[in-house]
Length: 392
Length: 150
Image 1 (spheres, rainbow over the protein chains, first blue to last red):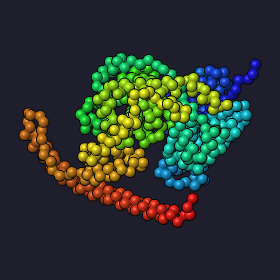
Image 2: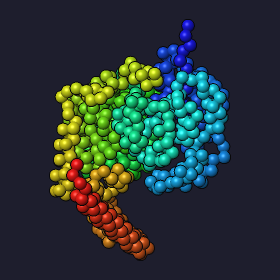
Image 3: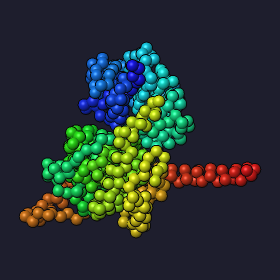
Image 4: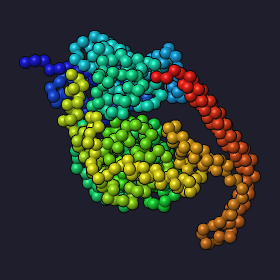
């Protein structure tokens, strides 16, 4: 009997329990698919759960989770946070850093010498090493250990970090790249001049589900129409834009529309909007799907998405999406699926939302078109074949 | 129909056409003044970074900002919606306002000055870079015209 192929995934966090993030979820899901196909999968990660503090919360060592051998390595202590934050602020302002400054930023970012040592000594055992997302130093330094077998799964956005010299070098050094969408691949090609023959668009499969919007409305005594957003509530995700827009929409149109939020993170809504927000925090998947199914639309105000699992889930729930049009990925999903509208400014938001509220038949048609798009492009069989082609 | 790897979605709905209609409606409403003023300036405070690809809307935003930049710090009509003791409450509010005004007028008028100066600076930077870009574009055209054909 032949030995099963062996692969390692490398990421700063492993998606488990309260550790949530699109990239982490994606890497875990791909790992599980390979386990199901008989591959031997190691997941090399840090002991951290919190992506702000990077505290070592999990014991170093190994655990088997859903058939994946998860190796936890401690995050290095002794980061110079002042240097890191000063440089990071300059990067965010698009300042031109020298290569040494970039390396200093990387060195004071999240690193794990124990993980690098493991890769150096054990890396030869792996057929392929897949790592991401791109903006963590852990990935930058790990990618230099076995570049000849490393595939980068970057979750790339058009943001200041993507323009760094060291990031460019990382993209150019590795064997290949696994992208989530075509716009993400095109962005990487534009920034780094990649050989498209080594670039694979894979994405993630989304499992179908049943949803009960009526039960959700009853449970939460919701009678008014509502928009929904699920995920991290961070400024980078555009949450302040959504809160301001909805507040002004309510003021200008006198339409009583609510906002349902699931996920985590602090946010500061305008005072007038507070009574009209139903903040559910972390909820079971079923509750999230029920909430999505009952919404007028799923609103995603971020311009920094490389895939967006939640809008695909919303389409599976039969709900159209309303996304920020300044990004590349989500409007592309909408154009390809005919499943959603987009806005670049408040007037477009108001017109789009008014249209969705006024035309239930349009909402239904958009939701169905989105559902069809996900079922045909993001069912696991299709994704599996793209993944195996990328790893071959 | 397919483009690249991914299948184009269901027939019957064309979101690009819908968006074109929406954008046309927005343009008309902007011309008519339906979106002008303080509200729009406030709505876009977190969206400015995303407008870098949309120069026309940025111009419109600057117009809205010009209208919104000076806070109204003058006296206003003081009312009371509760019927009981309304005259008394109005009188009380007027006293409170006159006391507050004594302290806040200087503060808000200075804030208005700062707002006005910041807007002027933003307009000047915008004008300066537009002139600079125009000069560079003209120079490129001039240099390209000097290149040999082919």
